[in-house]
Every structure is written in C-alpha cells, then in structure tokens.
Length: 145
Image (tube, rainbow, N blue to C red; front, side):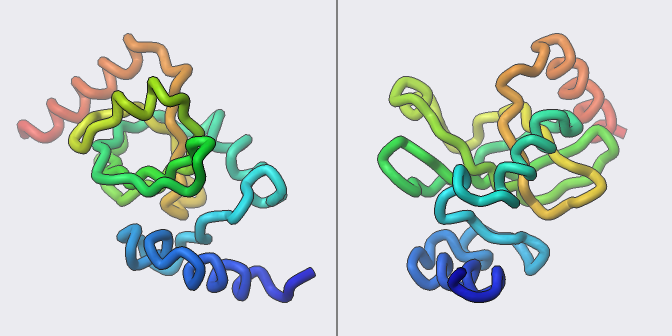
C-alpha cells in the first residue's frame, strides 16, 4: 500500500508530533497510534484482545485529541495487581459528556495484555465496581508494606 508499517508509524509521528512515542512518554515497543483504528487490522485485533485483557488501574496523566469524534489518546500511569507499573496509552472515543468529566489525576480501570506489554491499554468501562475496588485495595495494601 504505502510501504512498510514502520514507515506509516513514522509518518503519523511526523504529521502529529504530539502523538510520537517521545511525546507520549513510551519507548520503542509502542507500535504507534493508528491513523484510523477502524481501518487498521492490527488495531482491531489489539482492541479485541484488550477487551478481554487483565484488569489494572490507571491514573490519567494527560490526553491528546486526535479528531473531533471526539477520539482521544489518553496517557495513564498504570499499576497492575502484580506490582508492575508502566505508561499506558489508550486510544478511545468519548461522548461530550464523558469528555467533560476527564481530569488529570483521575483513577480509571483499564485492561492490558500482560503477554504483550506494548503500552496499549483500554478503558475497562464494563468492569465490575467490586472488582475494581478489590484491585485498588490490593494495590494500596502492597504500597503500605
């Protein structure tokens, strides 16, 4: 089509420097933000896997607006039940109401793929509040030790 996948990732970073790996605070393992996740087979596969991923908690650091759908790329500091911390990137669509409720420092349940660890996470909008609270308690207990 347009060349190698690597060149497409570099093109997106050139078009939107605010979405580059460096600007998002992730390393070279991050595959990059898809220009259109609906048309990207890799993005569709990743999103399907993330829907069934492992639950973790992410603290919202910042976000970038990708388009006026509104589609946002969220930067979250993620902490897992196993004690692993990493910068997570979520590529999500929001309603205007949801967008107005976003605030840095907000803790959100997310799902990640522990076998891949490519920095991608997805908001766990369907997570059971009791499980989220149990995870938060477990993380807090571990931090107190």
